[in-house]
Amino acid sequence: MSESRLEKPVTESALLSRRAFVQMMGFAPVAARAGWARAMTCSSRVAYVGTMPGTRAGLEGPHEIRVYDVAGERWRLKQVVASAAPAWLTAHFNRRFLYVVNEVSQHEGLPTGTVETYALDSDGKLRFMHRRALSLSATAPRHLTLSPDGRNAIVAVHGGGAYNLIPIGKDGRLGRVTGIVKETGCDDCPEHRHGAHPQMAVFDATGRRVLAVDKGNDRLTVLELEDGGLAVRERYALNAGSGPQQIILHPAGRWLYVASLEGAVCGYAYDPARGRILGRVERVETGAQVTMALDPSGGFLYTADDEIGIRCWKVDGVSGNLAAARTRCESPGAIRAMTIESGGTALIALSDAHQGVVKAPIDPGSGRLGQPVLVASAPGLRSIAIL
Image 1 (cartoon, rainbow, N blue to C red):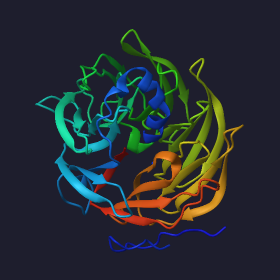
Image 2 (image 1 turned 45 degrees about the horizontal axis):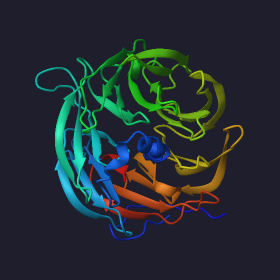
Image 3 (image 1 turned 120 degrees about the vertical axis):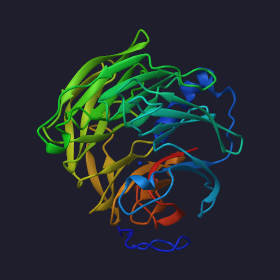
């Protein structure tokens, strides 16, 4: 099978030569049963892209959320909204609200990060609602995940080494933090000796438990919602210095995949009934700073790193093991985030090398990536959510 290749930056309109939305689609029926889908406000296909050019060398500019109409091969910019360091974007299952994690270390004179809430108009445009502070010392948050019923959010806090539980009202507003888990410990890596650094968290299908990764103490943690608060159910130690930074739960709920700074993706068996991580079932070498995305069916996992580019792995439906598929897009430079469009029809990547959003069609049978296209240009891309 031939490979598709992505080699050099090109003009915005040209073809290029040669990774929460999955969860949202999977949990949509649950949200509907809970009554959250009664007012499907945003009806158009829209992408929200967070930019933070001022945080990286060689790039300057304001921090923004850019709203695109994604119809056609070239995305149309329809709105730009100023935002305080939009490190992660999560759309509510009911398509009425967008939550934006602000990777800041101070708010109103206090050492804390924040989360912004936006209402979505019928055309997908954003309307600012409010900004909620996290717990004290919960600085530089990195990620937010929603419970399947849409009533709670968990924020992974890098700088403060903690997880915050925040209830969500029926009006979409975030309440005050009701649960805090403060992490401790660190590994022997000089970069991580300052303490714990939670990176990401995902709910399992029960809606009561949360799987989380911490690159500071090299641990997987199973958290549980308990009496309006948050408690630790299990801690699972990884290799010292591995630096886990991203986690994806397979739609079957029995496997989770963890990308680490050591240059590998590892698969782990998970028992959702007991909330236990049963052990490692897979390890594949990928390259440092790897980013992952899983197609909605769970049949293919995509990984991207600075040197190898984007690769496709076929997921075994019985064991959860990964087999390299003969498809790859070579992409020099970092890819900040990847996601898969609804239905698994295309892979969307935020490319530093091309300073824009790259879209590659996916063959549903083989997982093969087609010819990539640069669909939008913007400096300092950091986060994305697609409706």
